[in-house]
Length: 224
Image (cartoon, rainbow, N blue to C red; front, side):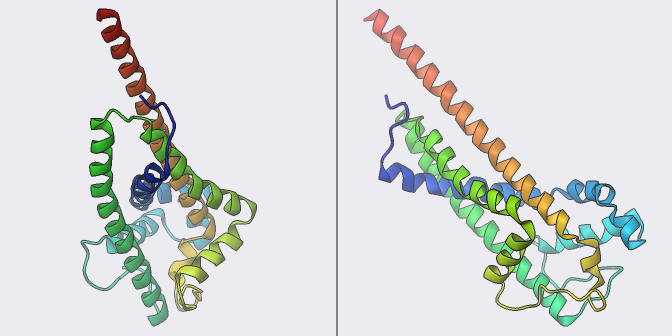
């Protein structure tokens, strides 16, 4: 029974599971509306903008509903006007989220098939390979963001979006005032935390399965 040894095939297949765990973390955090509720207090968004908590929550929830792949139609924030460029940027964000959902679905199916094969063969070590593959990208991004989040934030937008529509003017798109950069930093931190939790669970499951298999092998050997 393999304990940890892996090969190129295992590493390549582990990337599928890694993609599933990372996209799962992103989707989970997107729908953590309570994170924004906490930041209203933590970042004093209501005090900085002079807007009520109820108004902030209402518009943020509308935005999150809009990002759902099951929502079809334009974005209409109940308490904010929006320019054409601002509306276009949110449409691009929605398209990006839709891509993440597609990757999540495809990698989820692939992960199910892959894990079924490895568990059927009692090759539990594969979960540890998945953990190592999964933590690499979030760790690198987290390190870069911790050094200069503003730089990482700008670099992300310039890489992903091929226009300047993300550079909101508060005069024409006042919604940007209720979405401070620090909130996105907290969201990134939460994504990394969720990824690490999923990785920890995989590591624990792997350890339990390996110990259980070892125990049963010892029993079989003693019977023989």
